[in-house]
Amino acid sequence: MITVSLLSLGCAKNLVDSEIMVGHLHAAGMSVIPDAAQADVVIVNTCSFIDSSKEESIGHILEVHQSRGLRKRRREQKLIVAGCMAQRFSRDLAGSLHDEVDAFIGLDQITTVAPIITGLMAKERGKDEAPANLVTRHSTFIPDYDTPRFRLTPKHFAYVKIAEGCNHPCTFCIIPQIRGRHRSRTVASVVAEARALVAEGVRELNLISQDTTFFGMDTWAERPNPRTPVDSARGTALTTLLRELNAIEGDFWIRLLYTHPAHWSDELIQTIAECPKVARYIDIPLQHISDRMLEKMQRETSGGYIRGLLGRIRAGIPGIAIRTTFITGFPGETEADVDELDAFIGEARFERLGVFRYSQEEGTRAAKMEEQVPAKLKEARWHRLMARQKSIAAEVGARQTGRTLKVLVEEPGVARGEADAPDIDGRVYVPRTLPVGEFAEVTITSSQDYDLLALPPGERPVAFKTARPAQ
Ligand code: F3S
Image 1 (tube, rainbow, N blue to C red):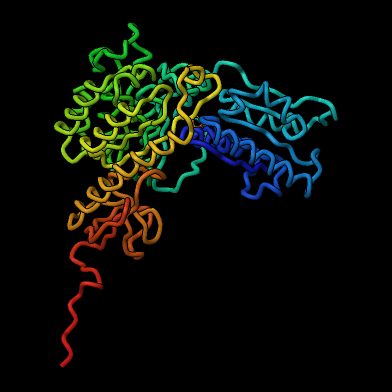
Image 2 (cartoon, helix red, strand yellow):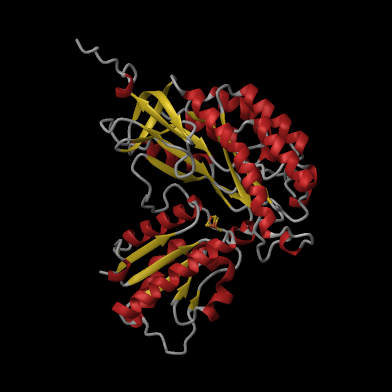
């Protein structure tokens, strides 16, 4: 039996691709094992979002190659590079990683990975023969509900990829060039997958894609312009999907990740408010607030639009926790832009916030812009913005003290609340006796930085129990 080891890097979208590869390997009778040194084939599923992700991907490829040099001869173990870095750079990498890599596969080859492995194993590669480059240039694949898949997340939560690709023109981002044009799954396909996951005991469905708010819009006869309100009267939209998912029986959360501010609508706000299974949490990367920066980034939004939208979301969905991300140090960013962003963070009081230092990425339009900001200045701006958010995060945490929350227990003693997405947000520390993978009700007793401490309702922290005075 052929044994395969797979290392998944990058984001949740890449993780779903890894899950599909593992599903197909199992279906083909191959065994997937954790120890790369013992495997006949190692797959590194790479990320190339920014330079550091590319460096990390190359580091792992070299590590696998070095260890097989020590323990196995190259002909005894094959190394396949998959994922975003392979999709974008396979032609360049085929030369620089000639000795290390046996094959590059792209996003459209994840369902044919098993026959690709069989072919590689059957053939002796000549000493000077180049690695096989099986990447097809424009990715078009999108999984359906019955695509073989083996989940790599814990039993109680899953990522559901509702669409693939991206049509946005953001000048800093390489992902549309990697993952291709936006293509949505059908509502029926996503609902069928969600039903099966809930029946398996999944308690949280995390809906992902490059832009979840664009769901369905690629199928409209008339191509939507970014400023067009997204309502279901125009065709399938995210609202249709949310209402159908909310109607599935069972106790579970639906979490919306990666929404784009340009495609929010009042109908979406109302839908979330009316669907109790949709978590009171949204992830809405805003990237900046200054009109100059939003224009240069081609975010299809403006400061005024964003302020109005956040006001409508907060008013329409009581108790919503908003996560966003900003980029500082984008080409041409001035002190005045940073002042505006700093003041906006103070005003908007996001429950969750991340700030990235702009990274100049080969192949993007922003990389060629003049007025690149020096690294030291980006660093200083990043510290300034993070310091602003730190006190807000402490205030957000302190507000939870005394509240009773429904949490999902992740591992003994550690849970997440509705306002915490997996792998990104804070944790709720709970008693170790609460069952893993299930919901529980707890009362928050205190907060620390981004995390909360909790006890089952009615229990009081040991430190505060009143001791009988000594007689
Ligand atoms: Fe994700 Fe990295 Fe690709 S962030 S979409 S794995 S470039």
